[in-house]
Image 1: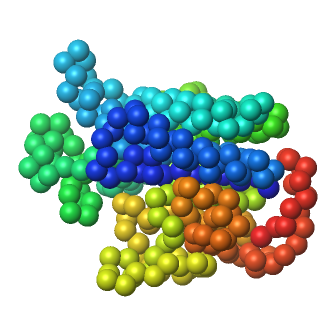
Image 2: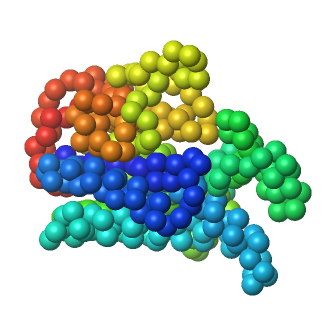
Length: 329
């Protein structure tokens, strides 16, 4: 099977942890074990990852660096996080998959310059702030902040991804048998000039789950796994009695009213992929990617393609991209 696996940025740097390289390396070490199990089970794997905590840290450092005449823009900082997290993942996977090529690819994602998200920043980046720190950042740095749980965080525009620029390169690398790390942090956001075909970076962060779903559709992937720091999507989230959701339809997932800044984009990405392809999407724990694929943990989402079979109908499909005959969803 061809699988796109998306790792949450918070799963690599959890709330309250110091953003030290050693801390993130430890989480990457655990994630690589889980991802390597997918590869050794015979699957073709493309990995994406979040970057919310990491890009927020770099943005804060850039804002206060006296050596700079102006802070680095978010698109450039996004590329930096792709390199940082990508190399940590690649090195760990190389150690666990001897003889297997592993490539981390700096990837750009096209967005619409007229996307309304540019007028309504909503994507959380960076660490938690007190109310006083948030007010200071708004006044002195021009940031927009919003409440995330009990604390405040910076929010930036998060336009919808419309195309993965390096898609042909990802396909070519997969054809060689490589494990590919791509579209990290949702990809570096760019717009394309319709007259010159040139791309330019924009001040935004693309949601990595929505970019992963787009990448999975464009790669004709058999499954989309969204791996995070919880075991399931929960009903009754935030109440005294949350319950794990084992299976769901896209409509059921959307009806849960999940938090905008955390689980909702994951749910929307999974629902959209299952709905548009009729194939498997799942949201599950970072330390058990194979179990999430097999349905022994996590929340499995299945949809139906308009005019086609239900998503859970069993049929066989031969994918010309990678020559495997697999049970289709």
